Amino acid sequence: MKLFRVIKPGFFTTVQDLGRQGFLKFGVPVSGAMDDFSLQLANMLLKNDYNDACLEITMLGLELEALDDTQIAVTGDISLRINGQDSEVWQTITVKSGDAISFEKVRTGCRAYLAVRGGINVPVVLGSRSTYVRGEIGGIEGRQLRTGDYIEGSNAVHPIDYCLALPTDCIPNFRAEIDVDVVLGPQLESFTKDGVKTFLSNPYAITVEADRMGYRLEGALIEHSERVDTISDAILPGSVQVPASGKPIVTMRDAQTTGGYPKIAAVVSTDLHVLGQAKPGDRVCFHETTLPEAHRRLLEYQKLFRLIEANLHRRFLTT
Image (cartoon, rainbow, N blue to C red):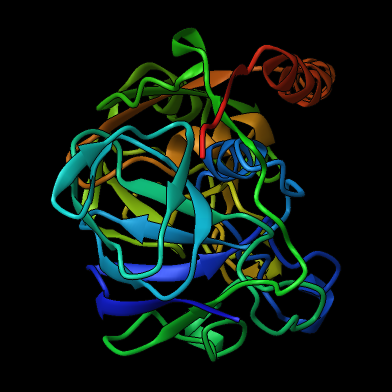
């Protein structure tokens, strides 16, 4: 069922879910939402499965024409207009056939998410609907949206008869100064003690060389203790590599699956969504944590969604 026609595609809009798991050994990146927290909240507001596919809107919003009645939810710090009138985000919104839906650029952060009731219906490729543009796989046909594309939904989904809204104190605050926790290693021996101290005690600016694959950072140079090139090994989203320049690179959701630069640390998984909202010019500070603490935080992160869902504001809709 065609739900929307793309009038303007925005700067870089793709279909994403929570990613493609289990295929790194075949050279296929995880992909998925850069800010998986906001994507899951968008789905929560529509009583969708948390992993349902959404539109990831980067920097500058798109324009859509509704082709059928449906419900949407938008998460992120972005202006939303329906038929030229301002509309609230972080809640369930009913749209009617013929409605014009438009977004401006994000105010803070870098990305926003548009969910539709029942999820966006694109083919599942290797267990995921996520778009991996460099590999030309996933929806929509492995590329970013273009003018004239159609967004399809499920035929079997009925609207919910109430509006859900996220409590104000649960809405993320996207900052230009970002703090993330890291677990040191796995090639910690490749760096001097001063190099590690430098990494953990200085802010790093995100450069214009930043995309879904990774962020190149600018700041204090990190000192190596030995030759920089190592035997290539596995890379995951959140790996912090340091090439010969001494300037770190943080890999993100579309990161390559192997690499030969030594890795000084890995960002804990529960902070990746915070980095996913970073844009050029933002600054990030890294803080050491332990693996047991990272595991504890992951359990708390998973419990947080159940807590938020139990405290959503509910208002029944009138017809």
